[in-house]
Length: 444
Image (tube, rainbow, N blue to C red; front, side, top):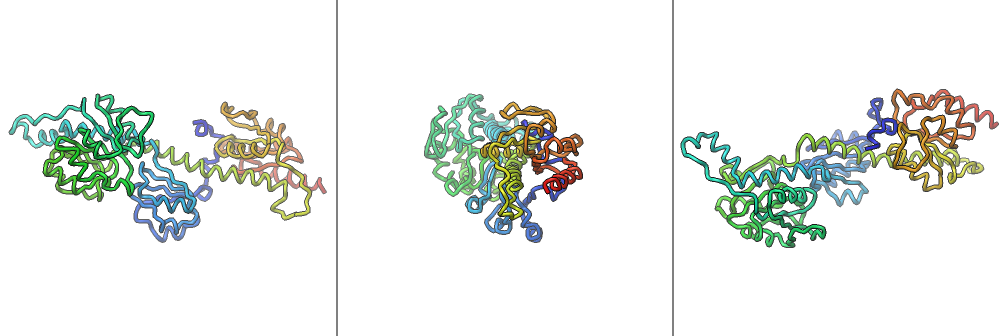
């Protein structure tokens, strides 16, 4: 992405001190009350997992929180109503886990049908020698597979199953007009027309224990169930009973109703494959999730930095902070030429706001941005020679340190304004102070 490649266009770098950055609470249960009390006002974002509930009580302790990022696809551990009431943004892993979840679901299905894990145990226990060949498994091609929840993961599962020659059908909150798979509004009807059922929907009040006795009976003695969604979507006690009594053929389970506790009856069943809620977790997905979390938080907080930049630009010429009500309005924002040094996420948000106010935008950046229509200048001196206002929002590095030098300040001129929301050392501060004092003396 352009913003990530643009070293000069972002305001985070190795020189940041911890107090310069938005405070993020990494939440793993149980939260330490003394820590929350000491840092409550500074915590602006929570990064949590599916095992760490974000409750109304927790949010009451953290009045400054504006963002909750969960490292899971589901959000059932977050009090969404409390977040909405407080104006807190919530984001999940989105489609980051779709591929890995789909791989795991199809893998569990193949394992159960072909009895791979059971065959492995058979060989390891020396039973092949003593008892002969292990019973054969069942073919995947041609199976009718019902998917409960055709979101990001469900669609990827469907794609994989089609490649294996399966017939895909599904149940979802509503029919997907762009898909040709048969749709069933009732999950029992879906089960009655399926050889296998894959659960990958969200856990809600409506889906809790949705896979009940009636669904298992409809699936039948030859049917297989795979669950990579949430354990409580399935009536676990009823599922165990059906498996023990042979009322369904098998199960591949990555999630359970009371994790990490797993019904002990399942340990003895060769037609059940168990996984410790790891379906979507791979090093690759975690790396992708990290990028999304940082980008989302950066986008949210960059809007505030842009607001501050524009606010300062209005404040300085209008003398709002000085309280000088009699001052002549020296400056009107509309029509001014504003140069932005660093057109990253903050710079682009500032440009949008200023453009809306009627300003003409130009910018300096390490590389020209083909996606924006603003004039680009290769150095800061060229920018200030063509603008009345300069906004600094680039990062601090060896190339940008004191980039706003005496020459740049002189080129900006006595009627020029400078706004810095980047880093102080991007400007030669001593020279800036001298220029401000000289300009004030000349006005007198």
